[in-house]
Length: 87
Image (cartoon, rainbow, N blue to C red):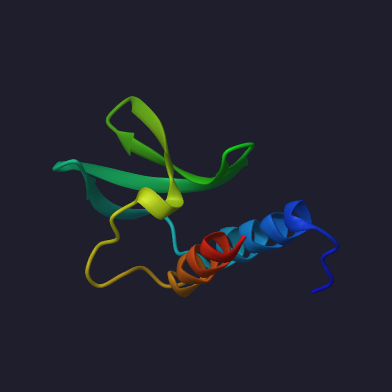
């Protein structure tokens, strides 16, 4: 895809993650089981929306511990990680 600046690159990675990451999936954040239901793009970067009962929390996708086995599409998170390290 053609991207002219970092913001467009970030948007492109967000679309790839949103379209390919198999949600919902379960994982643990700080030892607490959560369900990842959604991917979102914020000014801080790409986040996932984690649910635990009625509680919701946005967590940076690069800070999210993935379950084993990782959900389908997790390779796009690794692509984002690689991009974020170089930008």
